[in-house]
Length: 164
Image 1: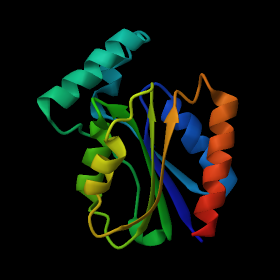
Image 2: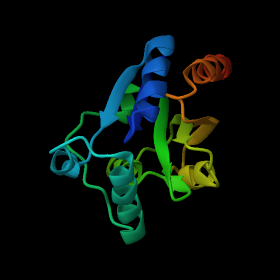
Image 3: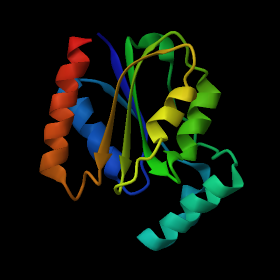
Image 4: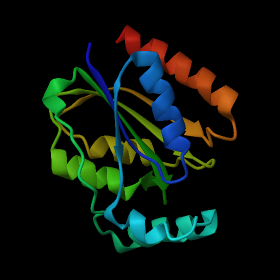
């Protein structure tokens, strides 16, 4: 089975999980980057500044233009998509990706990373993927800070994915 892990990560929490999934599943890894990341990289942005940038993107309800990436959904049997939770929703860059690719008719697994408030992010995530078979979903609480627990949760989730 050919698998892709597509994700966006602002504070590296989703990257931590995506890279773990890639290794466990021998999956292709597609990391999404926003066009304006370079404008924020003059000096390492604080968590405080990243938070306000993310809230600004969500509040304005604007698309988050993405840097070019290579992805063809037809090449995969399973697509795992991961995003941070911003204001109770999947991060806007993932919404941009899904709007651009128009994925349909695929088996999809979803994960979100958050600091303790996933809210309805997974439910909202599913609404962005009509016409697909959502076979699994998982949330991870600050995976980098809880790395051993997150790795075990990822391992357990992979077992359930392989059963589908």
